[in-house]
Length: 257
Image 1: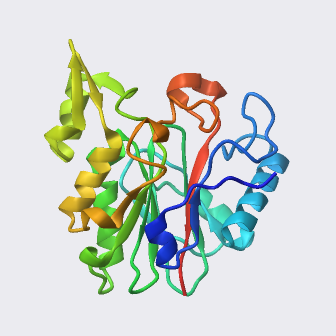
Image 2: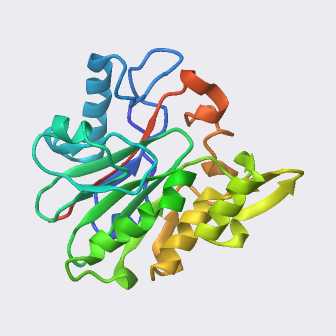
Image 3: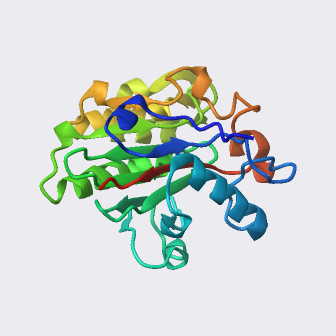
């Protein structure tokens, strides 16, 4: 079965190999069927899924880096043994130009964000839950890309499938914290002491605040309910919906030469 990747038009046009996975096209067993990338389950099935992803995106599986995600803002630069990278805590992974390193983040409702500097070929994959948004993982990602002469105004980004404002209900205090870190517009509805928050918009607002152009930020597959992981059981995993029976999706991007 062909692996049905979701991709960003902007990243593709700029020559960056990348993709956001769905839950389709792999070998994982129920209830994690079938393209699960959780790192603590059957290693043989995970290797097969990763191999299929590598073939679909176009990268060397030996240059595929992930980290231990902790809902913070730490950033690591990929290098050395990917097994060693996986033991380190970070919610953003960068890959340097000319290395052909692929960097990825795992999600099951949080926002996967892929950011690239077309001028250098440098890339970052960021895992942005609400705590990471508040902590500044998007800021750290853009700061790193700009640290070697890159310009935020020239960067491009893709925001992948995540829980939508239709389903992301939090306490009012949490909603206010997310809004403070981004924009009041991210609170789309209040219900008593609860708030429904648009995490994808929070990421977009932070990117725009860091000088990325609005039209250089893609929502994949879109800004509406088609991108909500909780709503679409056929295509996406969701921890909010399925709890411990949820698999993990990936957002991955490869440094350009």
